Amino acid sequence: MDGLNSLSISEARDRLKAGEITSMDLTQACLAAAEEAAALNAVVHPTPDLALEQARAADARLAEGQTPAMCGIPVGIKDLFCTEGVPSQAASGILAGFKPAYESTVTSRLFEAGAVMTGKLNMDEFAMGSSTETSVYGSTVNPWKSGDTALTPGGSSGGSAAAVAADLCLGATGTDTGGSIRQPAAFAGITGMKPTYGRVSRWGIIAFASSLDQAGPMTKSVRDAAIMLEAMSGHDPKDSTSADIPVPDFEGMLTGEIRGKTVGIPKEYRMDGMPEAIDELWASGRSMLEDAGAILVDISLPHTKVALPAYYVVAPAEASSNLARYDGVRYGHRATLAQGDDITAMYEKTRAEGFGDEVKRRVMIGTYVLSAGFYDAYYNHARKVRALIKKDFEDVFADGVDAILTPATPSAAFPLGQKFDDPVQMYLNDVFTVTVNLAGLPGISVPAGLDPDGLPLGLQLIGKPWEEGELLDFALAIENRAGFVAKPEKWW
Amino acid sequence: MSIDHNDARRVANLARIRVDDEDLPALASEFNAILGFIEQLREVDVSDVEPMTSVTPMRLKRRDDRIAGGGIAKKVLANAPDAREGYFVVPKVVE
Image (tube, rainbow over all chains, first blue to last red; front, side, top):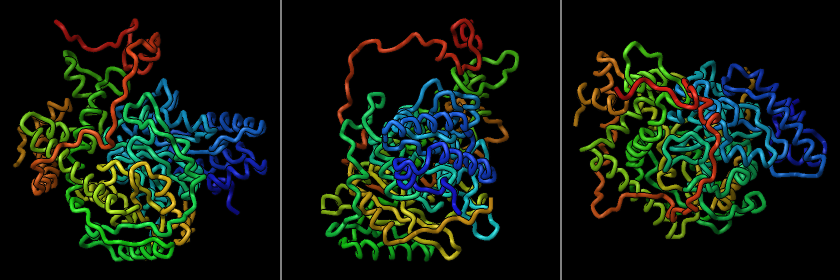
């Protein structure tokens, strides 16, 4: 029989409220599952003491009749979030030993809502990657297998995806700069949502590309995504880009009712050489939405093709600026200096030792596109292309489209090691997801089928700005019809 | 446009990342692969397009100009690789 750790957030919440289970039992089940799952390398800094203390406090609140949204629910937190007194190093060597003196807004909110943190989760270094292979902790292994081959859980939020898929926690936080929630969610057969830019505070989340970064929930169901998103969301004076607008009751408004609504199918997302399984999944997604009463229309998003190149200018440019702070002075790693080394040598040695190859590559590309003589040709040009990509979406929404359906990824999970040596091949993982970040829109990946090798595949739905509630209804309509209940067979 | 090992060295210097001379040619070729990929942007006509400054149009909030914190020097220094007497310590900067 499955343990308590295999419950969804909504199931656990209902049973906690009814007094049938305690947060302590639930938390201990998750901690035990995580301890057994060392082979997955998903949890990189377990926090059992904190978890048990929080579980005890949650049980006390429940006993008093308090039932905040996440009360007693064990969650995992991506290593990108600063958590007070708990190692938070963005899977980078340069932040080795860093223990924040403060709590990120998202984790503060989750804790206020009663959530229990079981540990920090693996990811690509500074969220730069699509496989967790750039992590200083080593790769996470996907709980899903095809034969004996070890597969990537995707990235950058690969530890979060693996932890949720393997029932090490009931939900997890992720962050998404170009697809880092949605791609790993698709690879691990779970639900992952990137909210509208500004919905969730970025304060205390280690920055990668500030105009694109957005945190979101990674969960076992669409309902759970609604519950967790609401707990994470809201205006924060400490993030000047966080929107000062009310947060709807996402779970309360969730019906899965999409009759009469219009879904756009963008022709540019039909890629040459796309695996047949992806094409079939997309077709079955269209049937599911039609079955739910939606009206399907063909649309065009003409600048889709240049989204990735624009992203690989804008994101590295912002990263080179954000990562300038890692200089070996205030926190993290400092290189051992030789006699006579000056402060520049200290910076250069510290950054050479502390950053991994992909991070160095992106920081230097960003430095190049921002440097004198190239700023207009690359950076400003990319910002103009970005404006056109956003306008593509605005135009179809103005024409009456309520949501857009695409595949989440161009393939199922791939073997670890397969694309690691070719950065551009790795970048193509984000081809369907990156437009959403460039346009600041909400997007969600929902597991919707298996490929011929038995690996999960996800469909992506893209919504209008601030309409996460409506988007969740589209996602629920897919979930209800896909009947995706497959779980990875436990081998770890 | 092609990057040679001298350009690669210049970029590494600007980014304050030490790269050994023998690694510069490989780095330059990686840059060329990535920049080749980025080159596709040139196909797009962007005349009369304003560069994006904010993805969600919003007015930046103002706050009162007053001191709202402080007195936490110990916390600020807690993660420093080298801190002494309330200061971050770095190699000598001024002769």
